[in-house]
Image 1 (cartoon, rainbow, N blue to C red):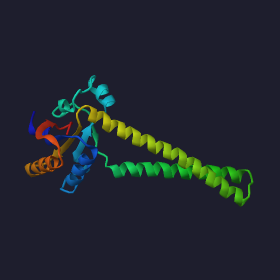
Image 2 (cartoon, rainbow, N blue to C red):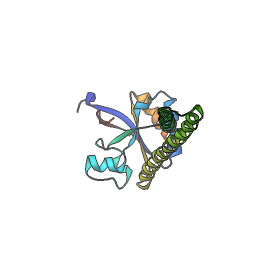
Image 3 (cartoon, rainbow, N blue to C red):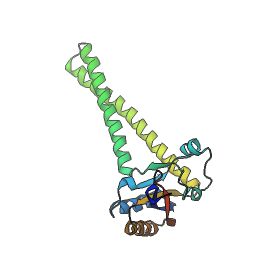
Length: 186
């Protein structure tokens, strides 16, 4: 393959989600874009794409066919949860208020029904938010059960490659190394 069809990236394995997040935060503060950073996809996606699962994440480190997911910072997951909860609170309150108005209810009934609708919508939002957290925790545990959290960082030049290796090693990444992968994988 020509160099146009291949890209360089640094890969490492982390034994803890918080340590991985610290490494990613430092990478982002050191000139990398969020789009340069990816993780190994969940087991279901791996089996769906490859027809098998990895017994150890190290087997996927240099596999250009390994399915990946974009890294999502914890804050963005919290923002999504907040948006779901807030949106459902708004929908619940609006539906309840609309029902009160349609029934010709008084202003007090409107306020009470709005509060009840907001509580109901908020409850649904909290349940969905907890579901999102559980899915994320299950994904992380699944990876840890297979040896760790695999992190890839696409590099555009030799200086960034060295920076990524240094940062990942500093944050307890193991088996940190650079390799070439097909451009579509990186």
